[in-house]
Image (cartoon, rainbow, N blue to C red; front, side, top):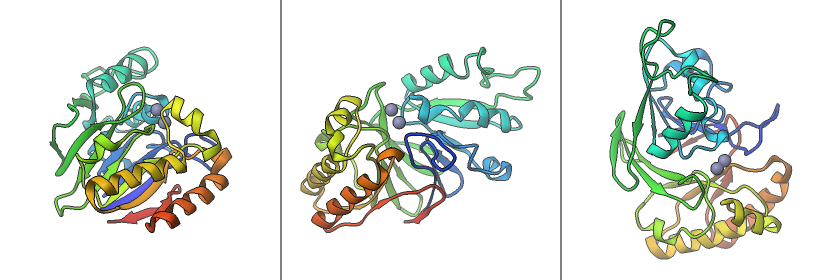
Length: 256
Ligand SMILES: [Zn+2]
Ligand SMILES: [Zn+2]
């Protein structure tokens, strides 16, 4: 399984992109920067897009992707709540066309919206997908994604602390997790449904208690303004847990 990070931040600028990553070139996860970081031929390879929740920074490239790839149908996989937000706020026939039905300017429906039930496994384009409810508003979910060769990652989407009941549902080799702010903004992180490094440490200790191992960890959704501090604090967490935690950056690849 090859994971390619397209956007790893919570704020967009010339050097930072909103959250999105690709699995094996064919499965996209969140759509913060899905079009700006890919060539047209690379976009054409994508067969399905998973969306963790309906916040703008995770769904915003969907209309642009549909506009660019109107010669075929791409699946958009999310909970019914997320699909409803997408349909009523972005591809709403006002800001952008619906893209889900034929129209004079579309040869066919460009997007097929596929809803997933949390905690019900589903096969999507050869991958086993499990949506797991997380601690974030808009009923955000994370995804456990398993390839045919049994490589498994878990992506938290946006989440705050309190994940101990979640860890028993999954057994990934890699966790891609939200760490948005440094430890001195822990209260803000808690209120907004995000993690800081110290909270990640507590969650990983809980993961190890439940599952008897620690997976590799990659951190995304990082606030660019606080990145050096977050990096320093994440390094301390990795050291104290004796595990590998990487801060992912745009353009990096990770092989499982
Ligand atoms: Zn969010
Ligand atoms: Zn977000």
